[in-house]
Length: 241
Image (cartoon, rainbow, N blue to C red):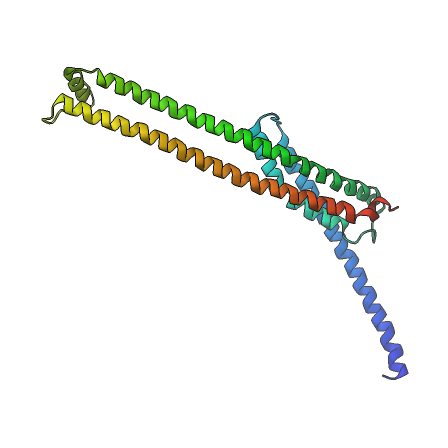
């Protein structure tokens, strides 16, 4: 390349780099505005979840905890977009907001970290409540079956015949004692089915609760770690202008 051609090439290259830098500045501002918008949308979600509050209710606390964890990608992306480009091409009002957002990431890291023991505690409480509720329902059903069983045991042949007629059935050539034995056998099977169904329901609900608890508690730990890494990486925002 000759000197004259080199002299022409360098200004063109500089101009091209300047144009690229200007285009990057515009794109960066768009990304940051998107970040502010995502944080605002995340705030709307949090308000909707917390209003009306129902603290001390383990079911509400557990579901709200899960909702917060599942929606955490939105504010994480929002913060990442806002902090993009550090202090380059910033408006004056952003200098204070960046410091605020940097400290906010630390606060959110602490909040999500504290949500973990709360989530574990509510998991234990909900599991106990669910088990107690299922046990009470099964006991009531078994008690009703035992009452029927007791009434049938003391029933006379005439009462059994009247009972069948009331249901639109008949002895069909069978003796009342045979029908009584059959019904008592069905009641015994029903009692066994109630117990088995109660155990299956309790096991299914416990598994579902544990799956959600593990997912949400691990999600809270990951979220806390990410927010804390944002805080560490944005020291430039806290010591800026």
